[in-house]
Length: 94
Image: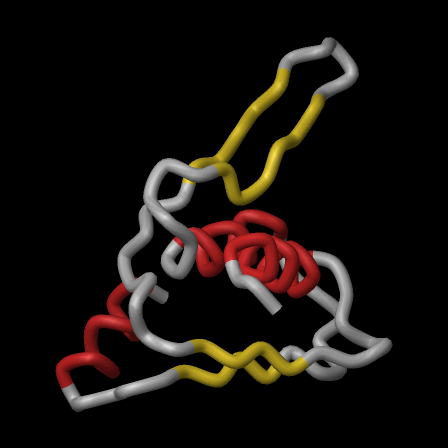
């Protein structure tokens, strides 16, 4: 995803649209890595708490936090797509 964002920026992209409508999700890691590109550096994107009590936090890379981003969701947006949406929504003032 990072290389796709770099490529889009090089081609002059001035905004992004994430259309996550009907996205029933995928692997958590993919959703977290995607969200991390658009959240301020070193802010947590997701926390995973294991049964053992160990907490694993994934921090954002903040690769592109200045380009406008619109996220489209519906009642069928789930799983990793929800993680992307929640991480980004936490950053913006609605």
